[in-house]
Length: 370
Image (cartoon, rainbow, N blue to C red; front, side, top):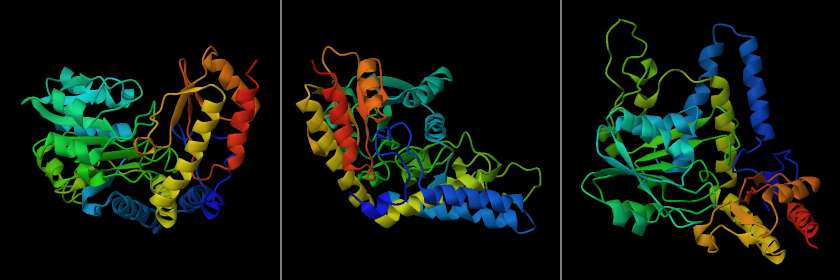
């Protein structure tokens, strides 16, 4: 348990839904309030001062991703980055998991409708994700890219990005949705050509925050279809001409983002950098292991990978012969917030989740036993 880290948050102890939304820290709330307050008292310096937060957020995101600001761009969410990537692929086949979150489906469906890249759907084993062997079996000459979630939203399966990079070789692009992993899981981010993550979940930055990093290979091969006026060269020159896209990751900019959300994102990223991803990941792993033990002890069936090396912060399970909605109600009665789905439940703790939460889950599951 990271006591100093946990002291930054006011989240109720039973909250186990970080895979859906991560309540922000007091730092983020205070930073947001300060930026809004400054904007309410605007003078000739206000806008320029507030917009400095974008550079701070971009620099911190780049460091955490193991790259530099020139290869990093802020985005309002994950989907925007995935559409940039998908529309940038002019032709060919892209491998993507049929079981992935819909945000990773629609960009490729839309490109196929436009006569550009076409998806070829992979079928991971239940509870698993995209593996190097699965990709190798599907590789053909037409495949130009692989799109994968770093951590599967259903099961918490952790992809081996380095092995996927090796499997597809140097001539194909690897597009990675990192929203269920970035900031809480150390992974080989440098294996990705496109790395995209929103900040509203595990990064705990609030809605409207996110970023992407682009490798040199991605900058060279992806067409900047969605480049806006802030993504071109000489953006301050309003001469009516068609300016060329920026040479670096700025080409994915469509327009100015909110400096308020940029400030919030910078505060959230700064907290992760301060306490380190490794320490946060270790604390989450302890809670996930404890929750898995409680679920198994009460007759539950864990759907997430058993191997801790292949499992991130998500624990999915079912309670045989008990409807998930009834399990959800029992958890709610103990002050626990899970994700309740039609066929299973998902528990996702963070580094600030106290041991008391595990006891609450145990009490809820005990109440359902005959």
